[in-house]
Length: 300
Image (cartoon, rainbow, N blue to C red; front, side, top):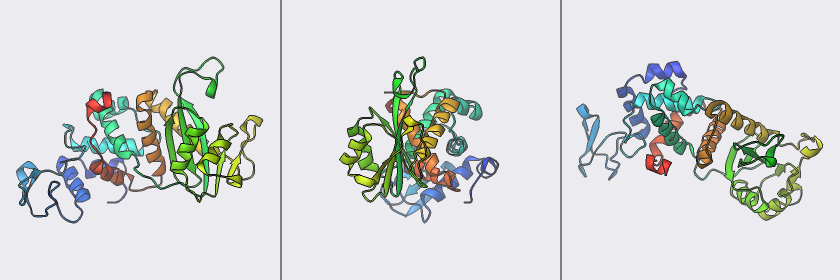
């Protein structure tokens, strides 16, 4: 399938049958297999949009065992929601999707979170080359004249970005050296060329704990009004933070601390796939393989 825009999406997937056929092609590119016993000896039950396994007699459809299975929402509305979430640069709020798709707010909110679960990257490759690291604060109540660490009840987000490469966002409890070192160890390659940070006092110790020594750590002193010093800068990760905040303030308006990590997963997935012409197709493939998120888990 070629890349799609909204018009071609509606033309190609305007019916349930077309959506089902496309999901079948994505889930079983070679031949239909039973999700229970993996047998390829399958009979089709055309009137019920189902298949019957000749081996274990399990009857199933293309949505069996996927996030689509327990949903009463038409597949074409799922497809539209997936497209709008993955192609909107700053995301789209559940309220906007409620109005756009003509569904309830509860349905739209639950739908978005199930798609975000699929967007979460599992075991991504370590970042290499030139890596920028910074931290920012989102949400909460801002005191008069307060900035950054001088604000109240804000959530901490740590960002790590490979220059010219991928991005990682993490919700953190603090910005102490131990916390920073943990994220660096888990996400930065041992063979990294250089790691660039600002002048925050916890970074030198964090780098040592993470095994980034000597000239591999370079700092830019923002407190002195310096933002670029030759090739030393953290402007790349700060630009990503700016996009994150515009998405939260401009689209979602507010995000609870409980669900912030899910929004971070969505933002990083969309950013890392910003040049992917087949993003809609690839997102659907992740949805087929994603774990099922029950509503009671989400609100627990």
